[in-house]
Image (cartoon, rainbow, N blue to C red; front, top):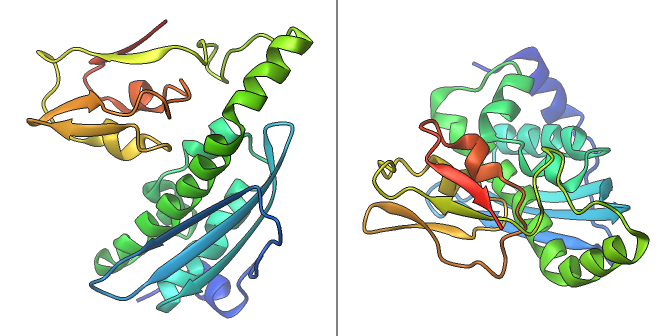
Length: 204
C-alpha cells in the first residue's frame, strides 16, 4: 500500500518538533479525516534555514510532513512557495489515492507559515532591499511589487492559480480568478506560472 520511502519517513520522521520564536507558523486541518499539521519556519536572508512540525494524523500525514520539511530547508521563500502536493507525493514515490489529501495539507501548512512570515516582515524586507540597492525581483526575474492581472475572458475558473498562491491572495469570484487581497500579494508570480492557459500576466 505504501512505498518504502513513505514507510521510512513514517518510522523515522525528520525535523519533528517546535521552533521557539519561529519566524512563521502555519496550521491546517482536515475535519473529515482528522489530520492536523502545524509548521514552524526560521528564515534568514530570505532563505528557510529550519523547519519543524507537529502532526496529528495517519502514517501518510506524518511521512508527508517529514518530506515537506526536508524539501523546504535551504530553499528561498519563493522557491518553497512553489512546492506543491504533487511534488511531495512524487518525492515519496507516490501515495494511495485516498491519501493524496495528506500531501495537500503538508504543502498548505508550509505555505501558511510562509504567508505568516511575509505578513510580519514584508515592509521590512522591502526597505532592506531598497536601502542596500538590491534589485527587487523574485527568482523568476519579475518585479516583486508587480501584481497579477487576470484576463477574465481567458480564465476558465479551474482554480489552479488560486491553489498555487502561497499567500491566499486569490479567490474564485463568480467562477473567475480574482485578486481579492492585493495587500498580501508578494508578486512571487506563482499564480502566473501555474496558469495552464497563461491568462495571468504580472504588471506593476
